[in-house]
Image (cartoon, rainbow, N blue to C red; front, side):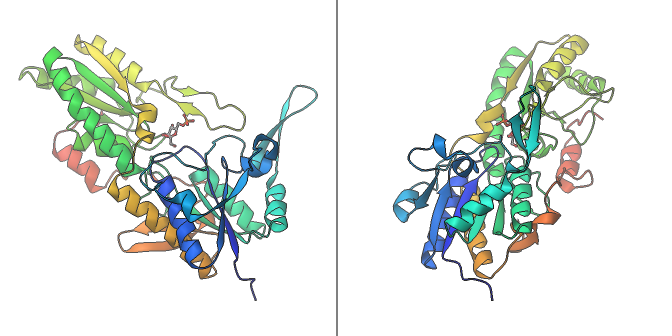
Length: 368
Ligand code: F6P
């Protein structure tokens, strides 16, 4: 018979996303209602791996007082990190080289010593891969998918995406008037890594004339032709480009080398696109990089509700005896999928999907 749960821990890993606090709040309250104690781990797993950094405690008891009034706040009260994956922890060797070691057993020891029976791990691909490894080693774990990029497999949506798309759309709305006043081409670079969800959704909602996404490599001359075609009628232009978009004639230098223990960083495609369009069309161009602004702010009501459903769903999964699963949110509600089916996989914009087709039907150029 499996041991009944008395204590759980919750942590947030990877880049922050609006809605994280609502998940934490939901997990804590749902657990408390079952008579379980809930603990928060600071900064991913750093609160356990580097106790010396946290004189006030790297792991602390979450009570109703601690989560009251946080559901509408951006960021995460637990803190987060996208460095120091415990499965591939970078260590400086005496000869100056860096070796990666697996420190996950230290986490298991911590949970066993402190009688923490289960973990709710809220994070993206990296965090869910770690969650799966901990589950394989015997810890009860439930994952909650988090990313503004919407690129996680096996869930229709994640929290944070709607907030990011809403903000990017508002920015596009604002850029139309200044583009029109100056008759300029405005290039707006949005986050999304190697998936074009934010660019596609915000671009269509915000009336962009061209949208460049990683799923469709672009020919800059096709975009320039679109601009010229509209030029005669005095139309303004805004182009949304996802940070991972690539031209047909080869990748540009827009990916910073990955530091050890950190995912590679993207950025700079907007400058390339604006430069090349300026030369090709002779028009004045400007670039706006929305970057981390997309990760900030209060979650929309859609994201807040999704986050609360994810959190309560995670606790229900543990109560039902599940482990090694991720809470998934689909059109028919919450369900559970094996973490091993999610770890290391990403979900791209489907080329045959109706959202992309809607863009094409509206005459938006995808640079192909
Ligand atoms: O995964 C979310 C994301 O916002 C990506 O779209 C972006 O490339 C990345 O995070 C940037 O993260 P950071 O600057 O925090 O390393």
